[in-house]
Amino acid sequence: MLRFLTRRLAYGLLVLFGVVTVVFFLFTVLPGDPARMMLGQRADIASVEAIQHELGLDRPLYKQYLHYLNDLSPVSLHRTDQRESLIFLDEEVYVHKALLTTGKLALVVKHPYLRRSYQSNRNVTEILGSAFPNTMLLASVSIMFAMLAGIALGTFIALQRKPALSRGALVFSVLGMSLPSFFAAIIIAWVFAYVLGDYTGLSMTGSLWEVDDFGRGEYIAWQNIILPAFTLGIRPLAIVTELTKSSLIKVMAQDFIRTARAKGLSEYRVITRHAMKNAMNPVITAVSGWFASLMAGAVFVEYVFDWKGIGVVIVDALEHYDFPVLMGSVLLISVVLVMINIAVDVVYAWLDPRVRLH
Image 1 (cartoon, rainbow, N blue to C red):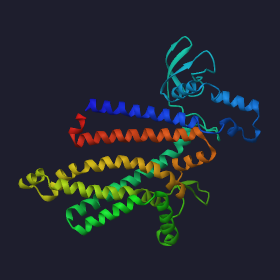
Image 2: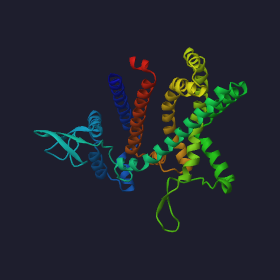
Image 3: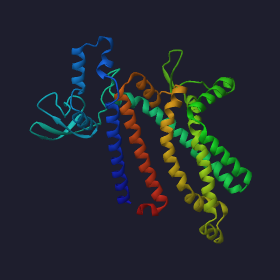
Image 4: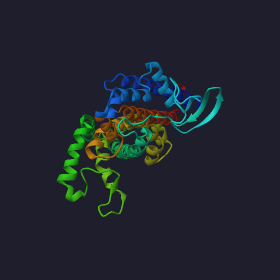
């Protein structure tokens, strides 16, 4: 199991390295001068050159790339004899702890540094740190809703063995897959928050934290997560329902199920202890992929419902060409997805030990 986990971690690090490389070169060659974006109408040649030098944009591309990797790495190098360097960041940029010092270089441990926003000059880590928990909460609630409802519905349809229910589940799956998140968000917000708003008590827009109108400060508005979570959960719900139904029907026809019944086990024990454990493998695999889709779809859904998460941050950064925020958002989402995929692989290997051989 340790060897299996080591291979998955190495593969995950390789994927992240590829993502970092693609993100850096993609946003580096995009049109637009960050120095002029930051200075606005006050831009003059001397100020632009000073900002470009401060951001390292006047350096060769390969040195900018090494500089960026050094920023992101939790173990990085610093020069100790000068404030600026062509490759290494000065050590006052972020908090760090020196591990080894040799001459003019120091090997330090630090948090990954995602640079600063071109627009607000805030640390990108701070911006993402305030928005990402909302996105994770929304995606987690959505996937939990899809898993619980989809497994329950798929199990019910599989055990009933009625052709009409199976065809209905297939139609539901196709419709759920074909419904774009942005369009679904608009329709659901209009129906449940506008047309039926007097009955549901839900608002068309709102985030997790709201400000009280009577001056009593912020409070958590849990009702605001209902509509965006339901919107995000529709598509994975349809897939989980169909996968659970199909997988459980196949498992129930296997020889070990007949053997379990022949031993005198109750039908409930046969289903819960034997059938469900083997039927969940494709469902768990699909959930990991769909969590990635939820993270991407959350950009549109958060924008429609004004849910203050990564989606709103990304849209704002796109409007203002705020490349550090965009790059940090992409990298953060990539790290989370790689970690989720590794965790799913471990769970999958626990459910099916044969997976560890690959």
